[in-house]
Image (tube, rainbow, N blue to C red):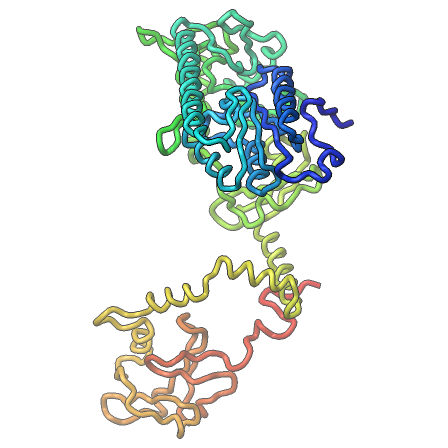
Length: 533
């Protein structure tokens, strides 16, 4: 059943919008930073704006309601982007907000950019509380002042909140926020204590880790017994490791480190630190009773670190796929993705059910298959499908366009030409190979072209004695592709040089011998890996 929209947040009906031009329509933008700002406040903002727009003779087309911060540079505000897109596309000519700081808190630059877009499209931004209309002369300077004041207000608010949290840490009190699994913080107490509902399971996790079990094995045991996290999710090794690293799990005051962007601006990302807050004497600050003691926590962390070191070291961030089809296959039992695993030799690469690997066999029976076999089968199916496409088919055209996006033929050819040019005083790889293949009795330059008599355009080299050898040293014809150094096949001088299926080798800068006619792997209906029936 769809949730009923409040009358204040209702969009205009087709009957109300019929026959209206963009000059007669207006969009309302309403925003709150967090849920602690009640919906009733936003309803009052909408009522005030609707009353004013009705007085101006405008019809409300759409109400954009958003819960986002307006002061953080990295926060994307989809609803505001939608409202601005409606103005830029010419759907409306007026965008109304309740107050300037409800529109933006990032300062004069952000407001100025938005006003430029409004002026370019002969639209306007209307602010109710300050009674500002961007279409009126002399209002841009007022918008700039109000935008900078809103920016300074948010800086003052951030400073007060940060100072309060630092004071709570200095006094040895819980600064607030989400506690780790197994402990809780009563409202207003400033300390933590064991949670009666979660403590038995949290203590079981600690005992099994102290006994030497891995975090993944512990997660599989919890899944087998049907134990879930605080949010009702399944346990995995990452969640257990993150819980153990929290200092509050041992009753110590935690500290967090803030992330910054490349320009030094603070982000709304806080990373928990493994080190607790320490007092003036260097001792950890205790804020209550945790699931484990500080010593037990250190032993568990040492066991985890030893296991990570033994297995080759840990890594952060998203790992690249080690297999061709990782994340594409799905398990036939749980219908979830299968990931590639293994390293080193090709035989060690496997596709495994991710649900089975992370949550254990009780979550999914799972399947395991060797990656080379699946890759070869999919490659054969793909090649068979492509070779069966008719010329001019949409599928083949799409493949060509996709290939052209990633391969610039002209650029690649220029690169090959530049890389293939020898430096002054150097010989090309072809010249070097030709000199070595001739042997120590051959000269570097051809001295006679007897192609017409030999029947194939071969160039015969003259030995140092001045006599052309015809029987003792056969002409060499090189089979294979250019630059691959293929197998050599000898042909006597009395034998026609234009043997079936071969083009004669030409010394120095002429093309190598290549198979005459179509290649064996390009027969009609064939493919290098066979056809699937």
